[in-house]
Image (tube, rainbow, N blue to C red; front, side):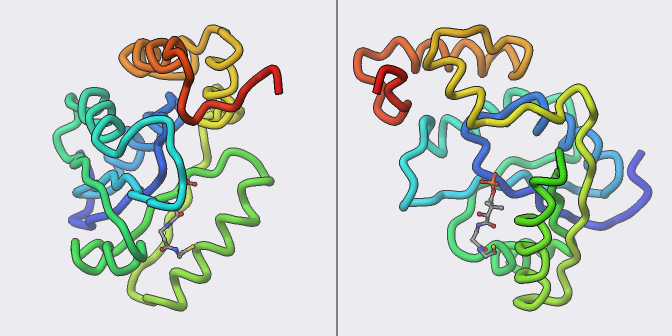
Length: 174
Ligand code: PNS
């Protein structure tokens, strides 16, 4: 049982959701009272999956966790956190290479809204090398992603990769 009434936001692109994200969601949901997993709706990036597809996959994978809500947002993260009365932002850190950018984001967010604390969770060792970008590269090259993502995500990835001209996957022969 979570020991606090704190509401936290776990933001990200989740394009696609990986087992590493799921691990962070499961652990954060045990720490805070209510966890909002918020998919960034970024109009400047060409994602592999639409926001609706990404929120659907997240809902499916987290349906067994009662204090988790799936949502999407655009604009500043701290403004979204304020709208949702969230006191904290959760981010996962896999390796030292994540630390620099995460520190920068946390400090910017703190300057923009000091009331919102950033909580970092260290990735479990078994997922510390998994990233959405690598998963997309593996599927483009017809590799097996089943140990990196939930089964439903793997199925959707296969479908996306078999589209005649994948809209946003890099051309492996280029
Ligand atoms: O999964 P990602 O792509 O590493 O997540 C990045 C995310 C969504 C946390 C970040 O891009 C973000 O917060 N975007 C919202 C815009 C914003 O608030 N920018 C200022 C803080 S850096």
